[in-house]
Image (cartoon, rainbow, N blue to C red; front, side):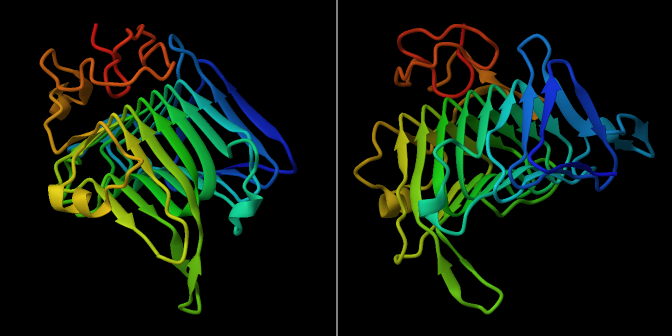
Length: 303
């Protein structure tokens, strides 16, 4: 069955915890409650399906969509994921925020660091009108988007790698989707300010021509910044959306991962991401390796 955290409780997963979730199972964090998944570099937390076998030509250990989602309901704050691996579900993490951007909390609804979300049949991280901070994360191979920032909010991602080479079917959706409104049940447009969507030292790559889509309503704020990022996006789309606060980016270039077909997203020795980043004070990478004064773009530092 589902895991439900409610009545202002906090569920803490200690390092080395492994959760095996059955088909359609959800983890639900209710209002005023929180989930703290506190793994370490040597003992990460793993959240996956309860089938890891090979049966009838299906490799369940690597088959997406086998469980539901981790869902932080509106009013759930102080959720923290560190050194956590989430795989083979439908939506990795869903964060629902507020109806009015003036009500955003002073602290993030979700902090996610040094974590991996991959092989989700729908979306890796779905944030809706919320406040999210992420660093040193790897988002890989999801059937729709790796990151969907809906209905405005405030978001910051540093030294993250978004790489969507979804191998199971044709994918028309972008790796990253950003918007600032929604259509309600009465077909009325509800505007929600995008206060911030800041990406620094991030890789955004995949097999589509445009791996970033901006969906803007002019009646709401739409503030975004890309700084020292490598982005898979056509020149036409980027020239249409580029703003003065975005700078020093590399557009539509091959990153050169070691082997994306084998899910190895560390940097090859000739990658354009090496030494191309900006020093923003995040001194170790996803693997715990030190970054130098000219850091590599993405979550991995080439040693």
